Length: 154
Image 1: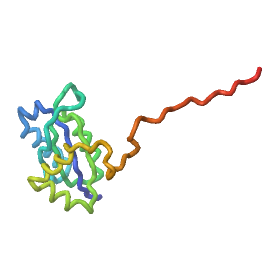
Image 2: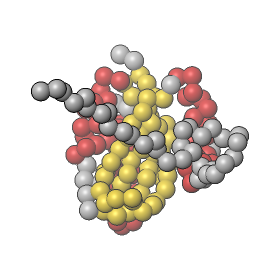
Image 3: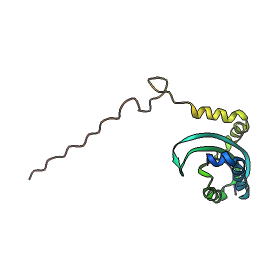
Image 4: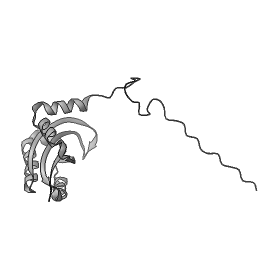
């Protein structure tokens, strides 16, 4: 079986993280290790107000974990995460082996998360900057006309 590097971004219940965050994060790590994984890096990501309530929560705490895991067991791990009441949402991606070293260098660096957060928070430029492709969003959407029906002779 092949061992892969995975990245899981958790959206945790911010009120529970505020009261007992270390225990919640330790539980995430122990859950991965219980299924045979090896945690490489674990770090808090960001706390922010949610766009819409998730499980009646208006604020969430993001946490990211990089780990090596056997790919055939990933489904079992995801099921255990879905049963955890502290996790509002999660997203797991497999890290491409050619990017593992670069991602681990950034993830282990204290400034790495600040660099990534800066990229998330920057707004895309708006307006008529000619150096930025417009992606077809320059104006209002084109009008749609209904095709005319041919009148049938009686």
